[in-house]
Image 1: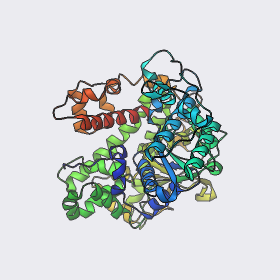
Image 2: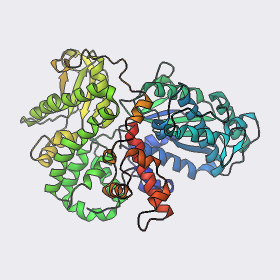
Image 3: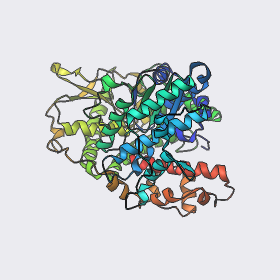
Image 4: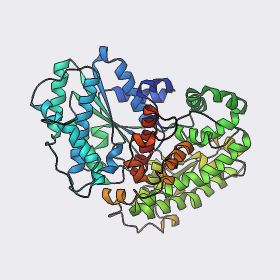
Length: 531
């Protein structure tokens, strides 16, 4: 199936983002929250649409700037994986420099005149250095630090959060702007708790009547620290799309048609087949778009093969590969995979085969289960294999624990006829029907004594271990991979070190396409490096 579908928000120009918006009631509530006054933590696994929703909120605020006077600032922290941490405070200084520069650049884009004053001067950096302002040079030094063995001195001091708050207040008062909303994408999502704690402390410290931070994070990879209380310092919202909603299948179809209306001719005659693929994705648009394009033509047999291949092999390969990037997590990752594949999925499949009116994709974990078990499940949530549901759920005998949902595609793939089986499961899915695992279940034994102390690799070790790895590990299209190979960019480090002139060596590739190709490749590299 040939198509121009893109499954990363980064590949969609910001000015076109609203053209791709398929608005459900839940999505509208999330976008409105992102546009509101309160700090928000937007939580969801890879590919569910966190970046897209933030970009949609940014676009709507931009359209209304002349009337509402709210300045939207979008900044990605994807480069966090490239920052060498020679001293503990370098990551914090990089975040501050990046935020200062992003706010100033956005203000300039909207035609706002900067006021004079010490706070504004401090967030600019006191002097211009070549083609950079002082603070832009600081940001550039940090983001290229992975290339150097020794720490480079900073040309200007980095301001503290109080100075940035003062500068934003001065900007708002001088220009008549009501407030600045900063959307931080890819925020503190790497498996390095110290970086995460620094980010959330900064998020709390920046809050003011003139400045609000909205952050997108992954489940299973977030350490808030003691200074930040999610329920008090922000509103935590989940992007998980409920497969039990009546409009679920229609919304997923609309997402595909918005990208490529020509696919409608192939999908409409095979509606039940498409719906099975959509439910298998369990609310994840990126997974739906990837699996939709795996085989051609679009028909029942090919989609059945796709479900079996992707949800038995590829999705698990992506999860297990986390252990290559983060060796300290290997035992947690391996146990989690074995627990779902060898215990949960067979139990659910067996239960669903019974001639009863209710089916299930849910399991329940006792609140007193070993902490290592809960950490392994959070990593499965991060990969999108499991969704964490309600905590404090009562199960058999009144015990209390947390309900989880297994990705429906993983469940459908257990059967030789995944479409037929999947149709029965989704039509009779019952929320309260669960497989239960008590506080001392035998499945926990391989991991119940596992120590969580020191499981995180340092940022420098994780980065240095990956730069020489093959581009085969990158989540890119076949065309992008073949282009990289044709250019001789065979390792992750080689892609990072290349510039647009290298990409222009490809026939018929000019400035614009070279920039787009390099951006797509570097985005995939950063996503890989950060997990």
